[in-house]
Image (tube, rainbow, N blue to C red):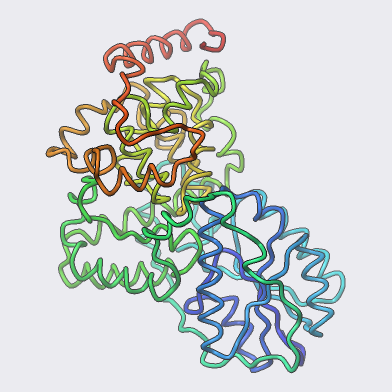
Length: 474
């Protein structure tokens, strides 16, 4: 494959050394390895918090490679142009990368592969971001899965390949190609003063990811099936930010959880199911490329969603007057993450009580999440809105008050993010833009709409859509 010269590895959302098939394949021949990250226009378009987190992840990868006598070459520009330049500078005739599955990434990678192969470069893309390739998991009729439960059963039945060890050696090239400086990219510029707040909540890099997995499987996994729904508890793995950048291989997580399940960890199977829910999102985005832009269920493009109104802006700022919703939104803005139960409640409130287009919420989550995953974000929003795969029925309207009574019974989560003098509330105010005009002692806002009134309005609009078409709501 390497044809007697250096091998080039194009890192993307696989910022790890272990269980990285592209890196392992490049190192297998014993020839010099050149590691490259390209900040191309597709990557630069990700949201502010995700860009900040990418910068942190790249810094951790730089450090990890340095321990192996390696470097990460950083270049900014069009991917094909950069790859051509680095291939020419190094004399490499082989290029490896790990596959990605969004429509934009697939289109870019196909164009790069075709162009470079035509120029005599040996190009190989590798699996590794998923438990199974989307085209390898099919229904009995040969089509993609559209419902989660049979998809879960198919993944569990087929087995998952074991993770691969990191390369034992990665020889350096005789001469390093030039590299840009990570600090010059200013990947955290868009989060402004919020970056220092995000940093308090992030754990970055492969070592941190592996430590987090070990901590979770040693303790919290036992109660995961129930504790995962309580946002004030440390009941989840926290691995989502690492998975989003590939700082840990999903196969490594799978096999570690399988071992825990066999050893009697009662919550391990539920954890595996949640891992496969992420997989299901990637499967669907691959087979239905407009998952992030159009309603998945037929007929739902006719739903008369409201656009980006003042109500949506209040929701973004955590100023809806519904404490559970506002706490969730403030948690996300300060930490870059939001507890999954809170995500469902906040998304339901926007799409059902406020009748706001799910794409408005999708865009804000993409801007604010450090664990942003394009497929999971799209499927999650469509699921809650009622128009997506395996969706909660539209008449299932999460009531923020009853959800809070059930999953935050002593109010700890709400107090932490909303209460005067609380660390979470202070962190949010520190991170929030000054133009929002938020002050610590401000009285809580009145609810934008009564909960019963909002639910009745949503169901009425749905009934009308199923009858006579309606114009946009105002």
